[in-house]
Image 1: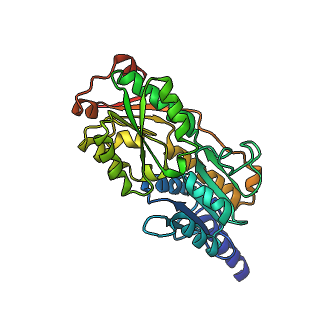
Image 2 (image 1 turned 90 degrees about the vertical axis):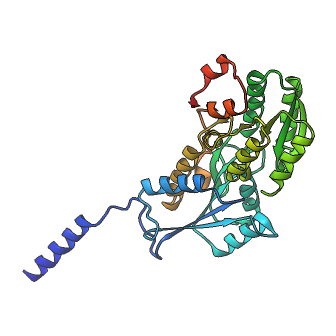
Image 3 (image 1 turned 180 degrees about the vertical axis):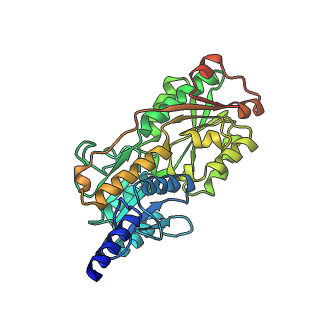
Length: 321
């Protein structure tokens, strides 16, 4: 009877225990590292949401360990090396720069990236067969950067001079296609480099001095992390700005066009889950977004004294009144 009672108690205990889909490793919690140029609560929060939906619980079977470049003399390189030494179970990156340094620093540690062109950057040999230890989601940043120029031409046809805000690492990869697209649209480009967050203020001051009419930031994890700084500076200098995704428009930016990055980082959680359960990154094809959204902030347009054409407003997926 005692043995039967003990078995019954164990069964009842198992039935009452919460179901954890992700499971728990023998040594304790899974360690998921996060590497980014600067803190970005939106993207990290979306990853956390995705992992939570899959049954991973922080302070339970999951520990997330963030590292950032900001405030470090050695930037992302030092942060990546530090992470690699701690040997996490997996590393998730926010942006192309973080993924690039981990290509050299991570060794055998699996990496899930949300990046620009991972093939062009040499992160993986192909989207369908990534090989190696890296996989994730590819944001088609080059084409989208050029598409935003077309929105400038359509929405602000009187504009002839634009400023392209970019990180110096993008000078040979991202900037040339933007400048070629600008020439095709009869737009003159002023280059506005920004290596760290503090350079963004200088870049806007240069734009004002050079009589730039519109700012178009290149897609960048740094700029996304600093979106409130960008939006504030654009409003201060009364510079219409076309951004990479709706988070900027929701923060007060004039206009954005691109994929839903929050959805991308929630999707990244499924890669983390599958790799923690034993799937090799080489077996997981890199995903690309299939939908893109145009968001216009009508309040900001009014504050800037702009009247956007009805054709553009009709195409918007969302208008913020």
